[in-house]
Image (tube, rainbow, N blue to C red):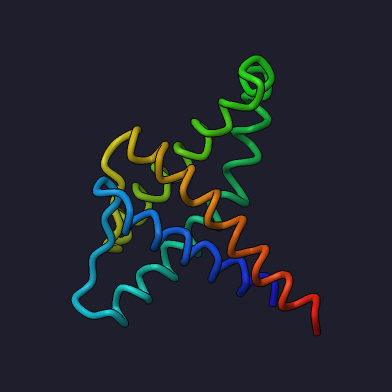
Length: 127
């Protein structure tokens, strides 16, 4: 159940980022197709964050420490760009145009993800 909640939270966060930023595009001919694309991208994003991100954070821990954690924004942007690259190779209709779009997108995704997870967690704890 937690996996599904994370998948939905990532999908919502990615949808908000693509809606707010012109540099993040999500295409699909129908609403159902866009939702399916969002779920696929959210799954890929989750896998990238679960496998690649811990390695990158470990290797760059000195930079994270020296920048008081601000380098984590760069790492998150890199994970979003990697997700965009992977989806491009898999012919999924999701693209991030450059570093700054990835930086702003990663900030939006982080904030929306925290809010959605908090809302979903509260409902789950109430039962």
